Amino acid sequence: MELLPEFEIRQPKTAEEAVALGAEADARYIGGGTDFVPNLRRGLETPSTVVDLSEVSEMQQIEETENGLKIGASVSLQQLISNELVIKQYALLAQAAETIAGTTHRQSATVGGNLCLDTRCQFYNQSEWWRKSNNYCLKYRGDICHVAPQGDICRAAYSGDLAPAMMVYGAKVELVSAAGKRVIDLKDMYQEDGANYLLLNPGELLVAVIIERLDGYNTEYRKVRVRGGVDFPLVGVAVAAKSNAGKLEDIRIALTGTNSRPVFVEGAEESFGKPVDEETIKALVKLVRVQSKPMRSTFTPGSYRSKVVVNVARRLINQLL
Image 1 (cartoon, rainbow, N blue to C red):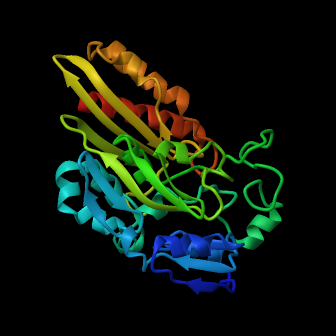
Image 2 (spheres, rainbow, N blue to C red; image 1 turned 135 degrees about the horizontal axis):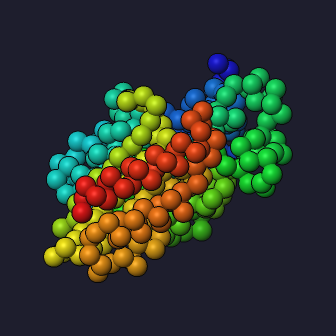
Image 3 (cartoon, rainbow, N blue to C red; image 1 turned 30 degrees about the horizontal axis):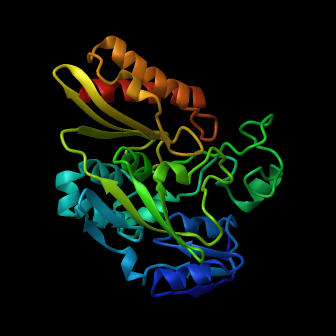
């Protein structure tokens, strides 16, 4: 375990104060710190300033809107899990949040922290001496991706559990920077590059997530991991499905752990209006197979995770329809 680097901690009271501090060179935001602090200890993060968001009250609320919920980025996972409105009308969120880490972690870990969770790889999440002995990697100080040496981008895997669950609720994110506020689809906050997976401007802060209510849908989140608790997902699948008179009305599928970003599966609308039969389910499963790209970023082979994500998706689609 490495010693923590020296840095200054700042505690703003408002989002505007936070982004002013976050715009400084080598500044980093911290929510619960359950992933950030271990990265500090491993030398993966070396900020000169850490902006602690725990005093920004406007980021700690869960508010009901006309069409859904607005969830502050500093809301803890435990608050999300125990919120009565979330339990009653947005059970998929509570279900996904409850799979994250351990009970004590969820007391501190935040919604925003999980959505912005750093990508992970067996060649990256190691001690400094281990990384150095392998000449580092494309994600950190190196010039090659050990997972895909012939490629030119990092293949570290995104493994946040909330993103796929929120995506099926049509999630949008409210972002604030020195240039002002903008609202974008959650899925547009990410790109397929493990070293630069977040499409945020320098110093830009995730303030809240806005989700829509899904009436008449069956929902489920299924996570596969090495151990039954604590572990990051090898594969995570979120599904929201709605059928009527034996025909598929709508289905939304999102994945985590398979790519360098959470994946909202595209193309499902081609099956809308078709009978809920084996042919339709095969078409939906094929979309999952084609759009998921598990690689050897974990100690579990990508080929195994490719089979797992397909089978989990098939089971969930069958179950919900």
